[in-house]
Length: 319
Picture (cartoon, rainbow, N blue to C red):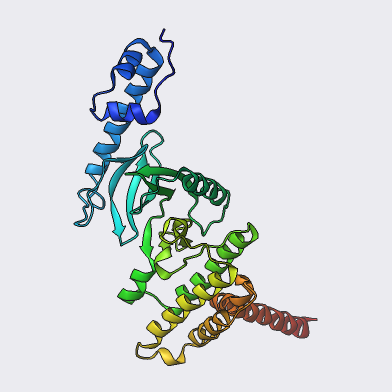
């Protein structure tokens, strides 16, 4: 049995990928049955992941002209590139062992200061404690080329800004986004956290129709970092709603949409808000979102009235 400590997962990942280990690690693995078993599990899992993702046209072969694509970010296999800007490369990834899909926001700004890194890791652990169906949970922080990489739940769907640009949005979806994102912000604010950089590209419309804030925590990785406050978050949501209303209003025949008028009032109220209460600012949108239920209510009420009238007629005729 070896007497030195077992190597970390990162060291074993490198060996599994074909990199030559140091003499010390190589000797340890050769003598440690447990480490050899760990290494074999990693090789099997990574081989399976690579095969599965090479068969998927939606992620296989995705590249970016601006930055080279790594094979791994920490323990996460990189399946493709979701987007890239001046601050981040966003990778679609999967955990090497658990095979859970994630989105990896890899910062382009190195962070060699240990104190700054420790603060960032502590903040991300706090963000990870927030649970809400309209927030992609923060799962992990890795390092890539001396820069932090934030790992969050992957949300399958389309970004809200892309839907706006393509015109694939109506006032019903806009109302739901305003309402559900307001509830998500309220959950963050109750935990003492502000998003700090909410924009339409922050929101993904999931396959089941849920609006999801997909980039929580990324504002902490920007240069300079932005944490913001509750009031900023509410006004940011107001600007998003205002932009959506403008986009929909430019279409022919949109002038008679009462829900659109209510959304415009919602945006104006949020932009003027000083309270930082996202739910209160978006209350008009909540009412607008509920309007789609009204036809069902009137149908049920009509059926009940008809039954009452029929019962009265039967009673009068036969009794």
